[in-house]
Image (cartoon, rainbow, N blue to C red):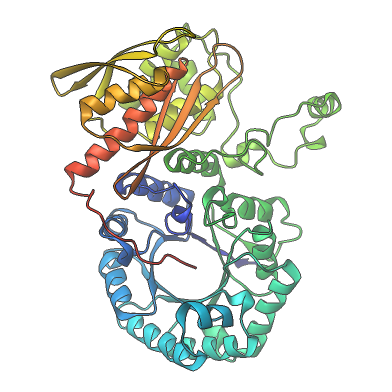
Amino acid sequence: MSEKIMIFDSTLRDGEQTPGAKLNLEEKLKIAKQLAKLNVDIIECGFPVSSPGDFKAVATIAKEVKGPVIAGLARAVKGDIDACWEAIKYAERPRIHVFLASSPIHMQYKLRKDPETLLEMGVEAVKYAKSKTHDVQYSLEDATRSDMDYMCRVIEAVIDAGATVINLPDTVGYAVPEQYGEMVRTIMNRVPNIDKATVSVHCHNDLGLAVINSLAAVQNGARQIECNINGVGERAGNAALEEIVIAMLIRKDYFKDFYHDINTREIYKTSRLVSSLMGIPIPVNKAIIGKNAFTHSSGIHQDGILKNMETYEIINAELIGGKAGQIKLTARSGRHAVRHVLERLGFVLDDNDFAEFYTRFLELADKKKEVYPQDLEALMADRLAYTAPIYTLEYLQTTSGSKSIPAAVVKLKKDEEVFVRSETGAGPIDAAYNAIDNITGIEPRLEKYDLRAVTEGRDALGEVTILIEYQDKTIVGRGTSTDIVEASVRAYLNGINKLLAMKANGNLNNHQEKEKSN
């Protein structure tokens, strides 16, 4: 009889530690609700003690997201555990996730404590967490560089103290599959009470081995995999959820003894949502969900595909909800055709939302000969990343040239009040940004600017993603248009509106975030 593999998603905790990927509360909640639709078993949604914003986000998700276990991270200290419990206690199924390093290098240089002291700390932390909730996960940070005898002692002790899940992280992506599988197998054989806990694995991708290491661990006794959408995470990222779950399905001949309950048809939509809100583009050659994953340019490949899809495709795009419609969309396309293609892409909107989307579609279709599925995805990404605007763009005019001073006239509307400013700059985009700064009174630092063409051709839709920094906040802004200057302005204004919303909610105070790890 096959055994279930629990899918533990840490996109909102470890994934958010990706530089520049900071999410606000509304964005975290959108992702958490989508993860519930994806049917992950556990959502680790933050590190509550790290900041008031993180605490509030975890508490909101615990209250509003039903279905998955809701987990929060805590160091092995009472203050962290108290904060974690206060945030997750509203969940239908709360879990406290305690972590403490077990490797000699971490013990000596980071924690500066001896192994026995740390063992006692771990046991006391688990006992204290257990007094709050029955579901307690304990992680031995940097397990793959730890002493086996010591790890076995720690694991036995924390299980006796009440741990229900034991996590063995490859924190720095150091392991190779055979070694990692052997480590899990040894622990399964040597720890006498291991049958009282679920063994979990958490792999980083520094050597590009996170997914295969995770699957090797399953073959040797692990029954929970920690992973992130699109493989986002610290440094080179974490094991990619979509690669793990699809590999188990496509190679079910090899993984016949295991199954998972992921709703794979939600993968494509979830992937695009995370990419959009975090401002992290998906590489075109990314396995499973990259733009080129189901694209063929070789004549020989194309000939084979036309004769039989299985000649060069082992995955049906419909499996992940990513098959695009084949209808050509233009300004003359009716609502039914547009809705049909959207649904083929995996997006289902109610009548009110669709009416709003169709208006955006017509605006775009008037500027292009043909609207491609990728264009619809970009418009949907804009909608999913939408923040109720404080300022809206009413008018934009820019001038530039080899012998002229770049300038911009920007008209913004706030409630019923209209503001117009004219500014110069190093270029038309810079001039427009200066005008927006003048109107809004916010002058963030532009950290990153990314422009990409959503489709091919001279009338391609341009998608701009920016990172702006203000005080201690890093915000993602997005904008799309067939005019790259307009797309750039819409992205900047999107980021400014997010900052102003945070300011209105009192969330722009400086604070120092505490250590984030695992």
